[in-house]
Length: 251
Ligand SMILES: Cc1cc2nc3c(=O)[nH]c(=O)nc-3n(C[C@H](O)[C@H](O)[C@H](O)COP(=O)(O)OP(=O)(O)OC[C@H]3O[C@@H](n4cnc5c(N)ncnc54)[C@H](O)[C@@H]3O)c2cc1C
Image 1 (cartoon, rainbow, N blue to C red):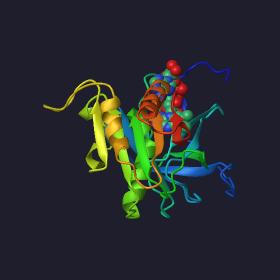
Image 2: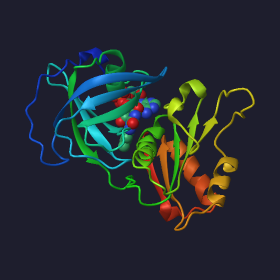
Image 3: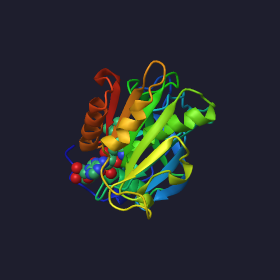
Image 4: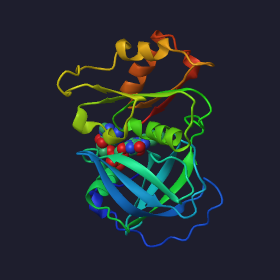
């Protein structure tokens, strides 16, 4: 990219771009239909993608913004919504300080704005709902894991699923209102009265692995590089086979 950083407002809302849609490798038109605030720094963007051919929980897409002068920015975003036939997908974006694309979404984007997406991508981090899943995420790393939780609920699956999610504090916990008995939150900076504050540790992971379902757990870890490294070390130390740890890094 030869351009220097420019403010997010540089992205004009692109006009309708005519693209065909035969495969995940093809750019498709998408329209923002709804914006929901999740935390002070994260919001969910619902996109209508009429030609979307479906995804598996855990997969992500490539998103493309095009400015009026032809300047293009592309980023990967995990899909937060469970697979369905609605022709919509939901993304949840953190507002990265000075971020070009997340800045545009958080300060400029409105329902009706158009962009392009390509996907779904990455079969490796996908969870079809066929095996016990131990999900560990931090910050916006919970996004693809939430797609798995939502899929589990929507389909009424009985296969065991557990989520361990780390956030700085309750106000930064994305999807806080949606969690149920499957979820254990870990707060690193502040917590409700009586709840311990601290980094995710063996004390959080070991009890989850103590109870092994038939066939064992498949672990899915998502977050920054540092978090992914930390969480996978905890898992291995607790006895999780390294070949059954799948990692998605946002960093
Ligand atoms: C597979 C995959 C899935 C992803 N899914 C999501 C998702 O669901 N939700 C989401 O919010 N993000 C997700 N990301 C991160 C996303 O692709 C972008 O990197 C992020 O939105 C920042 O882009 P930007 O254009 O706003 O910032 P940029 O303009 O690219 O960066 C601006 C500045 O912020 C720094 N920076 C960039 N990214 C981060 C970050 N994540 N944390 C802290 N500093 C950063 C850069 O080093 C730079 O200094 C995912 C990444 C990958 C690889």
